[in-house]
Length: 383
Image (cartoon, rainbow, N blue to C red; front, side, top):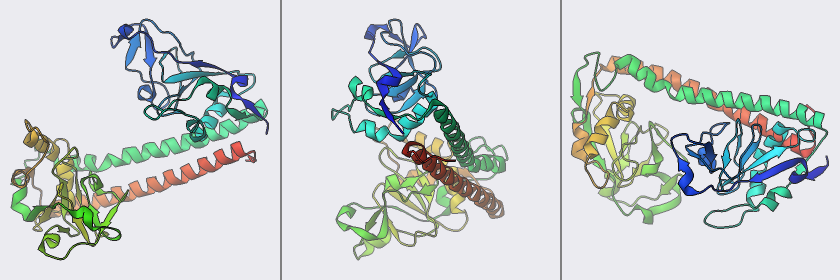
């Protein structure tokens, strides 16, 4: 497969910032794209307009980031003002297919980013784009391969959307079973969280000295996501002997709630898979007495109109975000019977199974697409 420079098969128009006084949010003039922050999923979603555009895109151009998130793409569906952080690539349609070029750029953003200069705002110059080597099979072959890549990409996008929709399912089931937690339309009894707490505490300081390459988990506030504990960038410890370590040791079935910092209010039950773990000073342990199911309480505390509403009110007027243990005890929730909670748990298990199948499906679609891309730009595409 022969290669050519990008500038030989496309026009390149580098963006230029218009005068600052011409910016507006009223919709006067042309919508302006300054960088990836003005991108949508496929087409731009700008937030500002300018009445004095200097450089513009045309419908059908590729808009590429040339600063910060170098190589990020959107398709120009109309005329836009091009700010300093982007450039327009206008393929010569008789030589290179637009979709072929977009797949090549997406697959080789790392190569382009390595050409960048600048530590605070890495950027590439026009000559970096001009001289970029592009593989160029015959136009008909480009179109054939691009059509296959488009279909594979569409499949993985649909599967990602399915994961997105499935992630909203638990809350929808919660609302359907128990009603709006703020208005309690089903007339459920109102309990305080403290009525069902057997043990409530928060972590202690000084755990960094006990970090280790392996051992029990050490759960920080960033590890507590909504209704799950993430394994990303996990930290481990060799716990010190003594009552302080025992006090901050979690058990499967505990509910963890972040109580300080920017992540206040994130909540998750501890799964059976975590057999031994300890929490940081930014995380509280809610150990229940058996009268309420951990996943049910976690779902309530994570709901925007349930626990999250009460958490935000508890913090109102405070300079530094935070919750204390007494505030946690006083949180109120509509209380269904244990039998009703258990039926809800069964529905959550089904939703989890669906989510896991969708995640696996996305991984398979990603693997297939990446394999096709490697073949396409490696010159071994026979499908």
